[in-house]
Image 1 (cartoon, one colour):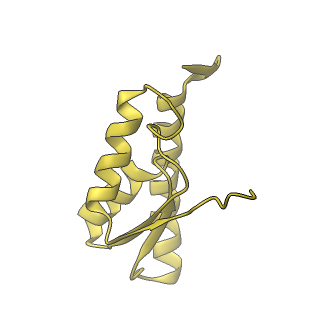
Image 2 (cartoon, helix red, strand yellow):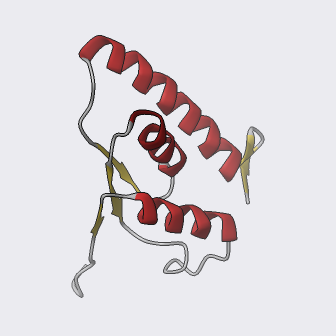
Length: 100
C-alpha cells in the first residue's frame, strides 16, 4: 500500500490530517469560530472527528465512494469510513448515473 518513499498511504493521510488541524487552528484564530465543517471521503476523517471532539463542531461528510465499493480490502480505510460516517451530522452521497 506504499505510494512512494515518504511512507504508506495511511501514514501520509495522518500527516495531512495533522497539517489540516494545525491550519484550522491558525484560521480560527484569525476569523473566529466555525459553526460546521465539511469533508470528503475517509481522508480527513481523523481531523473532522478531532475537531468535533475538541471544539464541539459538527461536520458533514460527502462520500464519493467507499473502500468496499472500490473492491479494496484495506480494513483501516473501511474502519475510518465507518467511524467518519457514524460521527457525521449528515452524510452526502454521490451517485454515478448510467451514462457516466
